[in-house]
Length: 116
Image 1 (tube, rainbow, N blue to C red):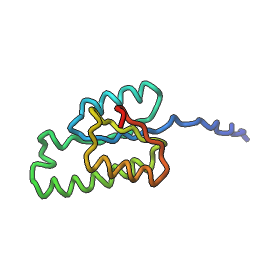
Image 2: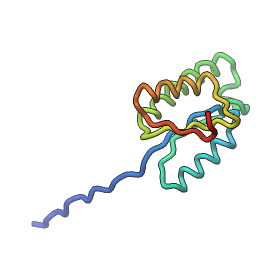
Image 3: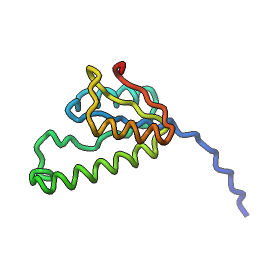
Image 4: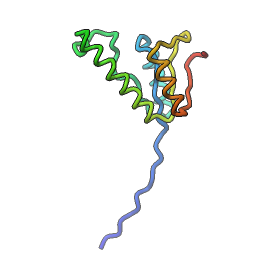
């Protein structure tokens, strides 16, 4: 009978979730690049509804999708070890503030790309 080797536990890299307005899509991508290069798993907004796309070309469909994506982003915050708020010029919209409040309620550490 062959003896099994115990599974070696591998610690996972920290998970960071990016929060911020998709108006600053390029800055979110840049933050994701730096966080990835630092060895972190990055969770970020999955789409930019400011850019035309058939998935949100209909206004009612867009509203439903936006609500669904907002809830999905809260689940990403649940998974993350910490939060990085991408806030060029200190800008934070209502959705980002909601995400920050949620992260705080969970005791997640929060960092900002620009001082608040």
